[in-house]
Length: 68
Image (tube, rainbow, N blue to C red):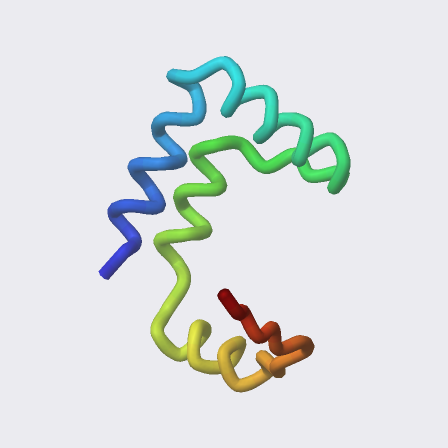
């Protein structure tokens, strides 16, 4: 599963200043107080069924055609 990659990226948030700024700005804009540990715990709780439920709700909004 890609979960380990996501957790690794979350772990790197504290290692890079610009990534930390972006993360905490997002927290401020969404009025979220989720710590990085809580964020990782929530990622670990996601199941295959959760992903399938969300995937069923996805609808194509726009199609782009690229040419030379």
